[in-house]
Image (tube, rainbow, N blue to C red; front, side, top):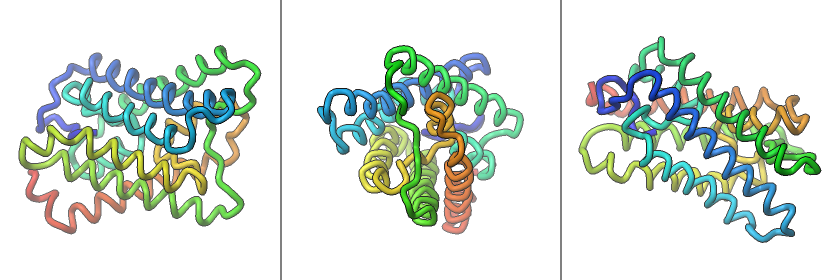
Length: 231
């Protein structure tokens, strides 16, 4: 999430990028949704804020671990957003998406093995207000994509703090949006648990809303002139 493009400091070969995206997305889903499961089986030992921190801290650390290899997307909406911003070649999109989806599904599959009695493995489901859930997912993804684009561009110091900035967005999004929509912001994060939790029916929301938010963020980024300045 720190600026994936062949022009801006991402140096990994394609196999390394695939592995980096797979590992990063696996970590995000395993730790984040795993925290939800552990919180439930432990009677609330982690808590809502703790779960949000698990998501945010995992993203932050994985950015520092593999950001210079793949750009650390870990999210199909972010990948498509970077392609829309002309910061990722089209040929890379299916490669990144495949690695992300594989990592997410593998993480949820492992959680299913570890917790076979748990019906729900952290699947995202909207509350009673579907419209509110959609808007929350779109707006929170907008913030995420906008911050990612902003810290991935310009002075080197921005790159140094990128992990903190992006991880912080994930944290506040999970704290605020968790009770309303599950605060996925990420189609891969929703798909993995959905497959093993019989929660595929709301998946349309967790694909369309993050994509919409990412596209809106790219539009705002270009509108501010940041996109032109990065070329």
